[in-house]
Image 1 (tube, helix red, strand yellow):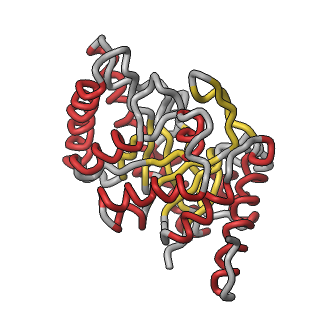
Image 2 (cartoon, one colour):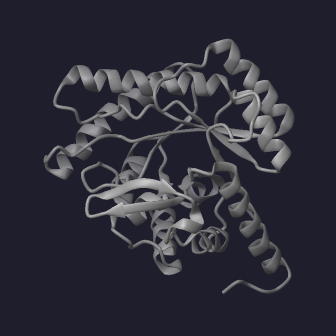
Amino acid sequence: MNRVLIGTAGIPLEAEPRTSSGGVKKLSELGLDCMELEFVRSVQMQEKAARELRALCEEIKIELTVHAPYYINLNSKEQEKVEASKARILKAARIGWLAGAKSLTFHAGYYHGDDHELVWEKVKQELTEVRRILDDEGNRIRLCPETTGAPSQFGTVEEITRLSAEIPGVYPCIDFSHLHARTQGAVNTYEEICEVLEYVGKELGRSALDHLHMHLSGIEYGPKGERQHLALTESDMNYKAVLQALIDFDVGGWLICESPILEEDALLLKHEYTQITNNIKGGTTNG
């Protein structure tokens, strides 16, 4: 049976010192499994610090993922912005790889009113180039474009999965909260979440579900989609259904909690996940 590793999007709130090293040590103390390096503003970590973090994570058995900067748009009308976007992905991937991160996620771009098929082709072209550069460098970090939380953003399950099917070394990042917000309240039942996982497995094969990069938190949304992340218990996000579906589909990988109360909600997810798996081993289910 696969195991989902559960952790936080960035340094836990209780961590002292407020460094990546302090963060992974706190996660280890709490019994959590992984941390996402949040390079969402810029990549500040230096190579020496990345190598030191890798050694520490290997010692205390904490895995890392990476979130690249928000300022990425592979469908910009201005080619210099596209090039800057690719440079940001590459920088995050290089430092993440040195730190031992397994997977890197990012928001790929915006439609800007363009035909969605043409946008997909543009994103594929640019992302193929990024993957080629990293492969030439011997960098095998997984590139995982993320499902996005607003209809104006490129990033449906179908778009992300299709990219993953056509570009070797590219995989989906499934943000369940974004899917819920993007559809203004759908993708929140056990059956709907199972449909997402079934689709990914069918299109990409069993291995995609064995190492799946995922995000989950509470979320506030409106007519234009995502507004902000919320604590799990302050939202309508059906996180128990997500966890049940992950277990029933034998999903492995990294489940990153983006809640405002980072480690508190990550521990809630870990507790619920463990409870469901123990019930299954004991011959019962949560229904």
